Length: 166
Length: 166
DNA sequence: TTTTATTTTCAATAATATTTGAAAGTTATG
DNA sequence: CATAACTTTCAAATATTATTGAAAATAAAA
Image (tube, rainbow over the protein chains, first blue to last red):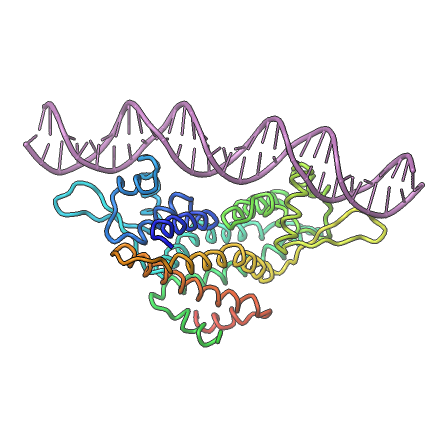
């Protein structure tokens, strides 16, 4: 396969994967581009490569910075901003886990805490309490898994799994 | 909190959680409803409770069946179809993991396999091969984690984590 | 077979989300 | 201070996705 075709397909795929992971398409594509870049990219280069507008590029670069998936670097003597991403998939996974936990898991645990304290005696209410309490328990377990995953900066996770899964 | 308010908030939250998990809003809300139901629900009951159209209800119920997140039950002597879901959060998680693996991870591994075989010598091509090969390795590790998770019908996962995380 | 209950389909519509591009904002430099 | 280089904003335009509802299909019952 030609490089240009491979690159296109990879960026395309990363974009659609992103959108089923709570990250919008363009944001994921910019990330994909940074992953394979051999040096920091400017907004202009990103615009040109992905054929997107300045506004779009800017917005999504900010979002990536916000998610901790890219960072700004300055070239000495230049005024323009350049961007890079960490190329280690494990760092990427950790960062995504951290953000999604904050944006999704934490709020749902809070909500389940509230609603599982519902008052009442009927059959429906009993069932509701039971289900939401179970979900809360599960969510809290998941939370502690993710916390451990985030805090460990090495590969304990896969080391253990290596032992289990073979 | 009143039951009606708690129920509303829970369904609402489950819906928006769903949409950031690759499951559409209404589908997640129907699932939420089935989770707290004390008996199987018919399409009509779902339509009424969530105030959605017949077409919408039907489509999303089919999608839940398709994901293995709901199943059809027939009441003796009745012609109408009723639906239930498994109430164990672990079963839910397993099912979602299985489907998402099939829909997302498997295709991306296939793609990375293809594009990492790109031909060429330049610096860009070398970097591209390196990054995509790393991603592929990571994706395959993730795949085996998920497979283990899916195959084990008990709680080995949390049992182990209990030991690690305390 | 005809009627009736129920489910499915799908074109039209509505709701959401993304993208554009030009104008406004910011900040370094002469 | 004025200009130039660059970044940010945001209302309007587009594109995408979800929803409706009525008609068509299916299948049990009369």
